[in-house]
Amino acid sequence: MTSLRSAPNPGGPRRKATEAPALAVAAVAKRLGVAPATLRTWDRRYGLGPSEHTAGSHRRYTADDVARLVIMRRLTLEGVAPVDAARAALDADEAELSLEIEVGDSDEADDADGTDRSDDGDGDPEPGDASSPAAESPSGGVRLLRAVPRAAADEPVRLGAPRPTSVSDVVDAAIAFDQKKCDQLLRIAPGTDPGHWWSTLVEPALHRIAERTFLASPGEMPEVVFSNATLAALREYTHASEEALVAGGGPPPNHPSRMRRIVLIFAAPGEQVPLAAHALAAALGAQGAMARIVTGSATAHRSLELVTMVRPAAIAVVTMQPRPVLDVVHTLHEANPDLPIFVGLANDEAAASLPYASTVQRVRSFTGLLHEALAVVR
Image 1 (cartoon, rainbow, N blue to C red):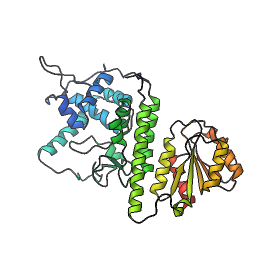
Image 2: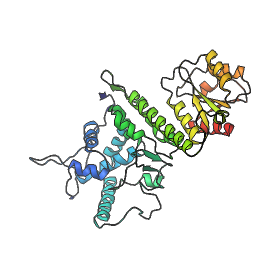
Image 3: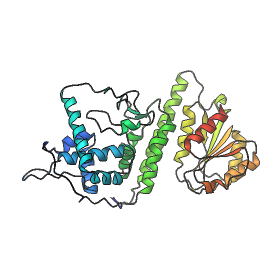
Image 4: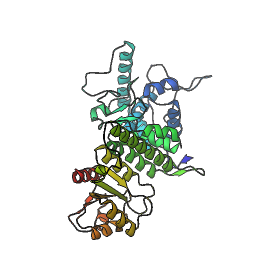
């Protein structure tokens, strides 16, 4: 598979490296917290490779090379597209590279004298700490807690610190068709908020994949790898949560007491894999609410039958399409004018086609949709 994205011109000016010893790919990979294969990919795609050549030996990374890679790594962790991060790294001037080199030397000195830098005194939680924005769970999943503070995001990657899963990590695994790795990266740790997991990791990665163009072999679809991993993570998380609830003395999922205030979730027609609908159901479940997703053929007649049979407390219509067909909203509202219906729509033009009624509300974001549904069922 070959990406059709054009790589930035690697032939930009580079200043002479400092007197620091040149490093092999394994040493640089350890310093940045990435796999050696990632460095080779950055070299091949973006020209961010080693520039020192020694007769009879492998090419090695100079201090300037490493400084550019630190910039590349930091920007990708912030969610910048790799091609844009590479361009910024290649365009870095002498002052920027010198600053990265000085900071890197300072970090290495701290490591050499055995100083414990788990709390560096800057007031920002370190990666892997229980209060950090993302911490690895014992099962290998990623526990997303809150957004990374700007001051922490601007710091260079530290040696030996656990590295949280980034959007780029997930995208790279999907476009490499590495289902096992994608499954592991998207696994939801117990106690994690699925809504935050969706908004900060899954949805941005999904948009990034949709923006890319590929030449693939038969049977290769990054979207399928990504969708499988997302659904597997939601299924595993939901089953574990339900088992914990029942083990603690709570009622099972099909108990009448849990079906009284249910949210029925519809995906707009044409939504091939309604990932957002599944994420919303899991996020509602994490907050103690019951939700079910309407899958398969949802014609107007069948949708009305489902609502009559289930008698939901609210209906949510979820879509990631820019201009979805919203006939189901009109059908359900006409038959149930008092039933709250929340429609997730980012597009203002599409929202103009919704019924004008106090019980039909357009919500612009996933988080807003979650909060509106919770307000009704609670």
